[in-house]
Image 1 (spheres, rainbow, N blue to C red):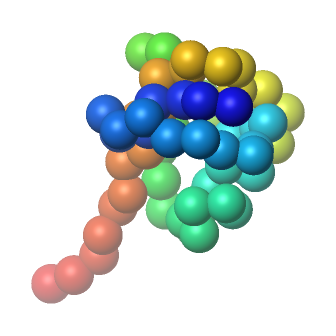
Image 2 (cartoon, one colour):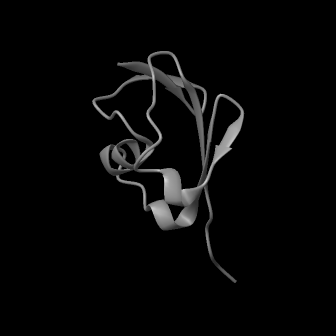
Length: 65
């Protein structure tokens, strides 16, 4: 399905946020995900279904000092 991730159109196999993060090799513990301007709680990543045309923003937290 086609979705928009961080401003780029992508073709993905994932059907949930958890699957999408796995497909993109992103650690789910270090991100905030917004789908169509709604922030998705981390404990709902595996149950939140993504749909054709969704706009998804993934914000990574990077540690450092």
